[in-house]
Image 1 (cartoon, rainbow, N blue to C red):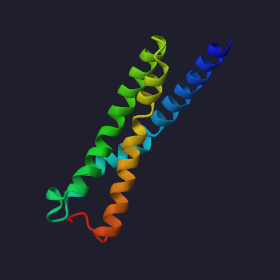
Image 2: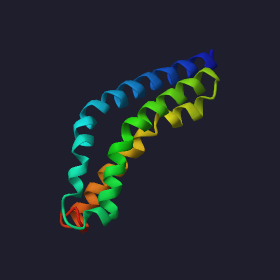
Image 3: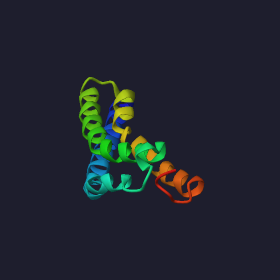
Length: 114
């Protein structure tokens, strides 16, 4: 019974993670379309924080879709821990984007070309 309960809990987590991260692709799309404007400021194309922010935005849908697919495949193969890790990969994109924005706000004065 313990194994069945664990499997159900992991299934619920994968469903919620897939739904939430998948839903977050919708508000990410306009940001992705506007991401080339991050490089309008002079020197911003050489700015590591600006490039990092653009990469985290652009790769979010890719990591979400691939991570969810791999997580469900691993779940069917009973590799539950690795499935949870792959389902949680989009959190990294979100954290990198937020931390990059915070970094630019504090250390670059909000300037994208720092």
